[in-house]
Image 1 (cartoon, rainbow, N blue to C red):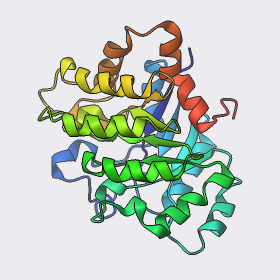
Image 2: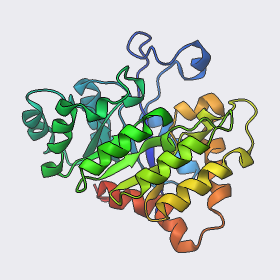
Image 3: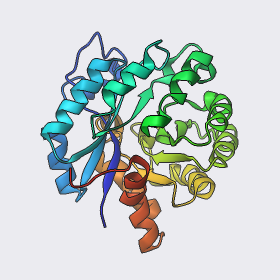
Image 4: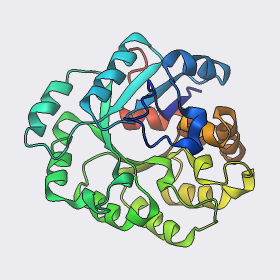
Length: 280
């Protein structure tokens, strides 16, 4: 069984650029580089990963691509590009020749305009992704699920993936509105879901395995086993335990799946979604 971590980050910590990593997250206020992750992946018998942008700049995309070039275990990169730029077509032409660049992401969860994904200039940029077969990672909070449903319905031919199961409020056991939004989005067969980052939405210091089961039930029922994939959200997951703790949640839940379903979840779905070349 091939295992792929579909969602993790690298950075050289900068307190100004990375201001979102505040004092409550001091455990991750330092550098996290491929050498740090590689030993973790080896220990957990995970064959490769997808490096995802954490900063809104093309410099971030170039940084991740350079790391991917130097480290074979980084199988793909989800970068950032200004989707609202007038020259978006030119920028995508520039990036199309980087074989490990699989798609892009924008930190929609942090935008004051909660419906930014419906902005005409933004959707124009999304339209420009398809000719190059680039994917798009959707990073949102539950209050944006309705807007996101409108968004994905507009682009039936694009490949989208919801990051971190859309960050439900697991800590306070809020589930109903999130569940309705997830179920609606999942009806669009071009949308997938990363089972990632969940422990950071729970009580960081007191969560237990059963806290996640209702949310995972809904995700697996809504998307099915062919459109879900494992992601650690390392090193962000360290604020609520660490890689092993995140892994324990997912291993516990997926143990009931068939061998074929587990193979899809742990690796094959990520390979298919991002069209990974495992030999590069």
